[in-house]
Image (cartoon, helix red, strand yellow):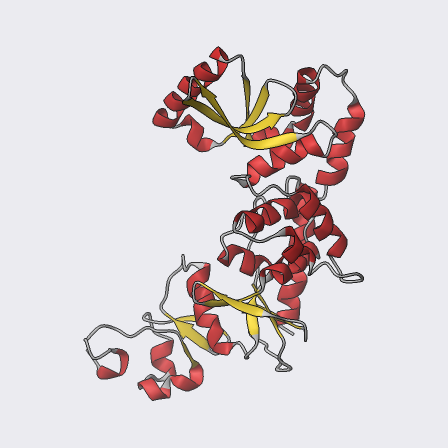
Length: 329
């Protein structure tokens, strides 16, 4: 094994590097074009991996970021492990910088702003949390933004901290303020947040998240959502609920809830996305209200431009495409 591609331990050193660093490591352009290396971006190389995690790619990309820079927007959200919009497509890495240095790399868009503030999260530079959310608020619908704010607040961010970024005349401020007002840090998944919004935005709230029930001092069950003032408990049944062990536990929990006269209504993600009128009718029945089609129209007025719909996904893809085009100019 040649010393130019190996560490002192004899293991291949495939630490990401910039093109000008190749000579220092004894690597020629020919070697970089070989199977041992992959071009990650303009002038940037690393180990080949078709399933490279965004964290690895971001770590490599820090080599070409100027000082006072951090990953933000959807890249920051993914690195923070927040819940991302439904069926989110591929997009370039997104970052912001307070530096005047212009960065142009294929696959990387860097927004320049003198107001950029950064922090390190798990060893990576990210824009500060409130700024990350205001960046998202510029491109996401309210329905897509609320689950991200749920995540941020569940991680310890306060409403006051987040609203500090929603300054007057700042793009996205209105949407972010609305999202904070609708957020609930007790939510435990993207779909649970959406199911909650279907009740709240249609006037069928209030809704309480993660309600626990006890009987004779013993724990009985915890439900995703509760329509306050009723005995109805809507829940999101994802794919894992059909697994044998989980399914058995769900049936057992339903029986325990039924014995307490608690009505568990489980909805699949397909129903939440495509049949909100059924969920709204169920909630109207639970509250003893006559059916009002205006509630369904109210939901679609809010959700029609979200990633729950084909139009909303195309809208977001178009907005993200402009960053790719700008990055390649």
